[in-house]
Length: 218
Image (tube, rainbow, N blue to C red; front, side):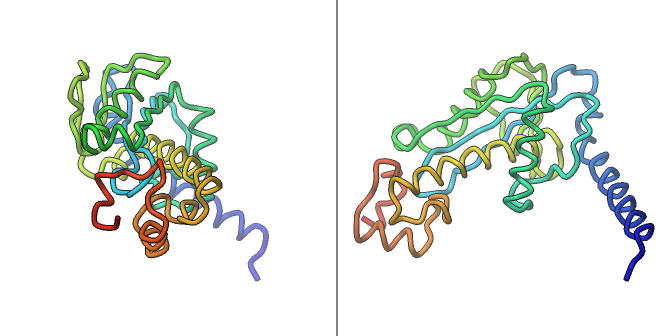
């Protein structure tokens, strides 16, 4: 059995390794350090059959000391929840944009995603002067933008935005599960699982279903 000193040394080594990973994750933020307010933007919920698309915009401090930021899909639910609280506490500013199913059906999911991103930017308490985006260029935004493929795993700011968006949307879907328990929203978050599709075929759509996504099932 390891001694207390050995356990502490192992823990210190793990933290040092994580600090090294986070240093690399801030490479884009260092590259564009001449900009004062660098904002990471990401969205979640483009693929589900039900629920909104949610975007988040996050401006992290220049001396950010948050560890374990990553693409939200690579983190456990428990770790995302912990990081959500830490990001909300330490970020310079956080904005969240939510676009619901009716609007998604009206303008299509891509345009709805852009709309959610613009809304998230508009809700920031600090005006950003550079946007780091996950793989897209947002139309209708008069700010410099840098599009980064797989940005949520390459930029700390985008990774932080992905965590805020994911936790926000997941919490919404859990609330919807209380209202529409037959569809399994708490577990599937609106994605087309077997339980979800079976309920859709048997009971029909709820008000939070995207009609343009479910024509094969109803």
